[in-house]
Image 1: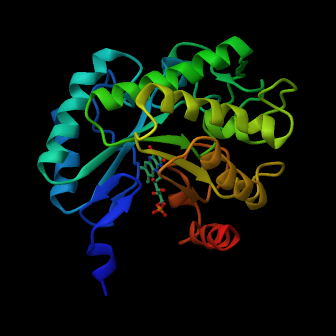
Image 2: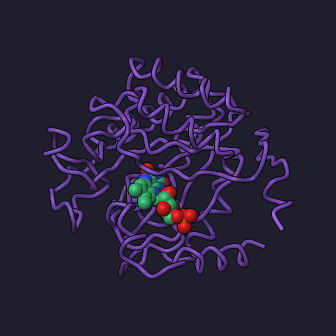
Length: 286
Ligand SMILES: Cc1cc2nc3c(=O)[nH]c(=O)nc-3n(C[C@H](O)[C@H](O)[C@H](O)COP(=O)(O)O)c2cc1C
């Protein structure tokens, strides 16, 4: 029954000892300054020892104004490389592979966490956090694209087997993709092609800095489930289009419940709610 999941897996150039993958999950075991410390290393080492073929770390923030939680991992400066390196070394020693999830919260954070006004594609407050975000200028947007690329390069230098772009859960990348949060009329907004530009540019930036063979995963929500938000039809187009623009190892869709922090859905909604759009998307992509 478990023959398939226990058999070796391959995602692009990434070879896995089995097909058990631990998805990104904020653990609250990081240090208060965003560094990887011994507690977090022990936490992931135990999961790797337990047998996961691939661990995708909890979200690591690429720029301080995009931090979602006080103890969130940071990857916005080289000072975080030594801790990240130690973690990758321990997982490799256990026989597993490790990918770091890189993220920016956009409007889904508050100045009480970051000390500054949140930023977003358009100045529309998150209904949960409520801070009015500052609309990103074109120049700021290109700077963030560079920061995503720099963060991925840090992961590569720290010995990671790849990076995952957090394009789900209503965070910054998802905010650009969605007509619900992106009301821009410039090159980063408007039709779906414009709304996809941020994701495409940051994928290209990562590939440029890390090399085209560096494994890249893009996490996307299947259906935003907010009025005016992205539905499965646009997700299908994005899922087909992004890998063509910049070849990636794989993408996986995930249902997103509402435009608010991603750790709430499992508690608030019925069981297996992720499955329906996942099956739909799989069928539509076949
Ligand atoms: C406490 C907690 C923290 C989470 N943190 C993240 C995160 O950092 N990044 C992310 O993409 N998803 C995060 N998630 C979502 C999980 O990766 C996962 O999708 C969710 O638990 C549902 O499981 P499933 O996708 O296997 O159905 C988190 C979930 C929980 C419960």
